[in-house]
Image (cartoon, rainbow, N blue to C red; front, side):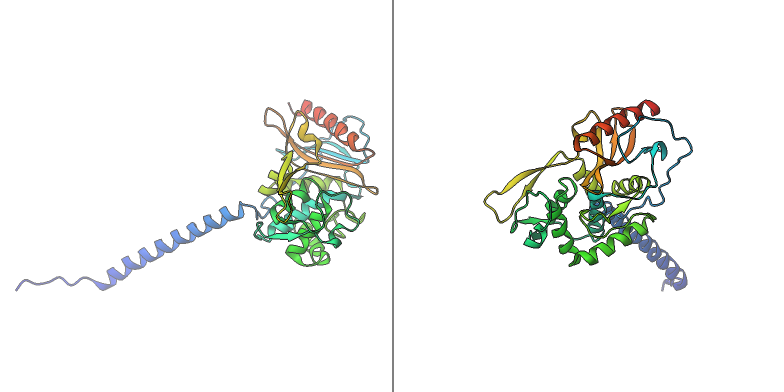
Length: 307
């Protein structure tokens, strides 16, 4: 009878263990990549915390009609123009950038719906959203960011956190997480003059907000087709309040703001035809159209410095 070789079981176990370890590593990285892809969607977590602004080479620029202003070379953080960069001021609806960040951090289903309530409409300024209108959270997010709609912001915060007070606590926790020590919120819309920051910290804030895909997408749209799910008027176009979108420059992200205590405010990340990016902040401009005129003046000047 022919002898049969009996395999060495210790060797088989070693080989099998190697296969198991290899499979585990592959599975880990596959899942990790899937997680990173999901984080790169609407629920982006900011990865660029600690963005540094370099004030070592500030230049003499145009005399602007603004209480505070900043212009930054987005690519390297070099500050080109600075005026009262650390003066704490009311920032009005620029607050809504953080409102949107907190909403997106929760990773909620943006196809969920919410109705505009009479409470949402109280002291809400002008709005195209009637009481009783039902909208998807995605459309409420656009209305909050681009149309700066206070009713939409209140409906969003109720949908994700229940109460404005709880949501405001989350906003303040978010800016602490980002290292913004002079930024503080009293409520989610920006109607309260106690929502404050500085030009320096607003420049960082728009930088961080730009990392969120939907914030960048919505704030760069001139208008958005918004669906009203329980109205005969099925959809209407909601416009963006940022008039820089109609300028010669591309707007990659931005936000306007106004209440009486803040005057007119604006922050934007813009690009030219060479792909050069600048970060703009204007706070306390005494006029709606004037803020965009001053913004274009400062941007024109800034591109002459970096080109």
